[in-house]
Amino acid sequence: MTPEEFFGALEHMPMPMPVTYRLYHDDQGCPLFYSMEGLPGTYIEIDQETFAKNSTRVRVRDGKIVETTWKTTQKLVPQNSGTMCHPDDVTIVVKEHGTYWSKQTYETD
Image 1 (cartoon, rainbow, N blue to C red):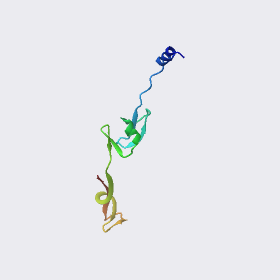
Image 2: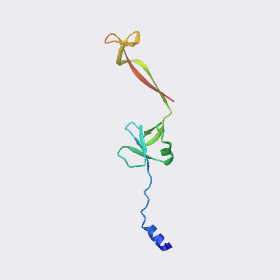
Image 3: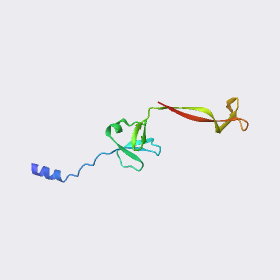
Image 4: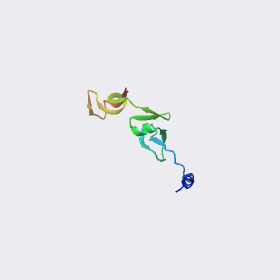
């Protein structure tokens, strides 16, 4: 093959498609999966380093990735609705004359 033939063939080669890294997420910003394919769903474009990390400890807020560093804790607290329990023992569920209890979530750094 001559140089002229080589460069002639090179001119007819298709241009490579740019690589796009995507993080697909739900409506609350929780990650669903990472992909380089154009799939249906809500996503943001990310860089190669973020794609390689493939972290699920992130959230999408205002179109940007936010690392989650908080821990969540739940505890039972008296509420106006929830499960009615005996006034002196939260482990006994009653139908009337009790206190309503419900889970409360606390987030800390």
